[in-house]
Length: 211
Image (cartoon, one colour):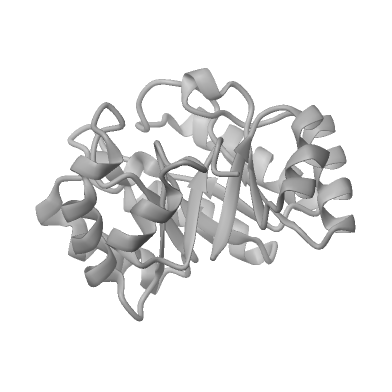
């Protein structure tokens, strides 16, 4: 089982490595849902994590709030993707939606094409959870076709307990089977991880308190 730890402070990196982290998702400002970390934060985290053979996925999100981005914000995200690649991040995490909460395929493709050209792994973040269930299958198929490695999902609004969204997560996992990885997250911690795993049988989980 892969335990991906969501972090925002470099001071936590060594401690989580000792506790058994398998992968990091690196952010700033988790209170805002996780934003792009600084140049220095990425550089030092990657250096230390790679010494222990732990991969780092860097959040690419220029602001809190919704996931509907202007052209200028997409330009910022492109620059941040290049920064992450320059600093040897293993991957990047992002998601773009339209104003009616569908995947913004044009803006996603711009970011995907850049990230793939830089040999970065790509993760679709929890913006996925704002997409209507009737759109899930088509969205998953599109993301898989365009080289997304995995989808981070809670299976519904973060205001709902993970145990309330288990049926949705099972549906997402079934739709994604043999196409794309699913990374359940949001409310998973070291106390409930194995209970969640008994219900989902995934090979990876995400959380800020997962270890």
